[in-house]
Image 1 (cartoon, rainbow, N blue to C red):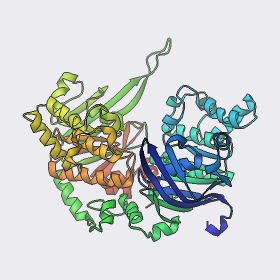
Image 2: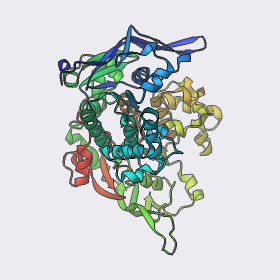
Image 3: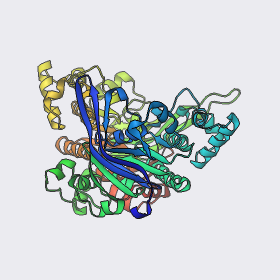
Image 4: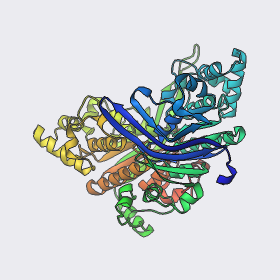
Length: 566
């Protein structure tokens, strides 16, 4: 689609500046932002956290609090409406009917006390004159249109009773209920499996064509928006650094930052020794070379000539279902007879869609869940059936890096104290001063300032908090680290930094990783071998490159086909 074919302007922004006011302090977050959105166009806005992309969308929706926000623009029009002169009543009529939004986290956006159908119908109650029966029929039709299974069943379910992908579809149905002319999708697929992500993107494209909507698609992933956008805006530190058609932006990026965003995502067609970061491009640092197949084979010959560090043999995890009267107890099998070996110094990937059993398996290896049956043999000892007191001395050797570092850190505890706490419990260090020195050294190792010791978790970015989580796991000098979706919520450039750090620590300390993820491109880059899980079973286990380029099972082929093209 060319710009000449996109005649009518739906959004026209010139010289947009936004500042947040806190008492006497004024912090500017947007600087002279210019962009346009045309009729029936999909415009992507990409950039890292803090680049200003979500703030820009909230300006268009009138969602920024007037009392502590300063907004200036030479021109700020949405569907010929002057945003700066609109009052609260204008916005309440306009928002939802003419311009609508799909938020990043559906679980936080949906009301947990109301059924999905009831809260979706509320939109129609506010903006239309339809009666109760007509509203329900309209919502059921929309649930079918967004490809929700059994719309009538979903209508009566609460958000926590459906999957993340289904919740996102409910949000989409709510957003398009009044057939808005503009739809803003703010990171709508960030935490979803690659297969669900692909389905949601295809769904949005279909709906855009059917309704003739204009869509603003906000993301931190350039590869993802390449498959959906007509044009792409790249934002950095509150400014627009580049705007072009999707084709031109990828084939001929003009700015160093755009080149860095493109290169920071693992390339599925070649194996770099180290991922390039934004700083590498800004500082024009020489890029790391490629790892040759011969180098990789030598590494793997050495790895797999050792005795396994961990052996799983026919591991099963059953959960009891609700007992029905006059019937025998039924069970749901989350992990179904898994057997595999993990070798010292190996990075083993566990991939699969939500509910496949990969996190359950990881939790059993960590001793956080008891296995129903089977053996979990670590360094010759079968851990299955061990009590918490038996596990206590082993906690030092087997650690975890969580997906959400903020949720796993105590908000009332300084980050230095959070790292010292497990060290003290396991007898690492001779005194508080000794432990503090070790932690300060560790903070430098993970790329943080030693002075951060006395700061609290809320004072850090997502990438910095993940480094703190890594420092806490590494502080105990473990042998095995389980990384449970530990980079899935990070910006592409921060993800590259964290993956490089994990590889560096592995080389320096000989760590062994179990890397749980739904992102096959990341797993292929980071892991030596990959185990694909499906419905509780190992569907396929193979060397990472071989699995990606020559998958044997249809399920694996489906996962790989869903990875955004480079």
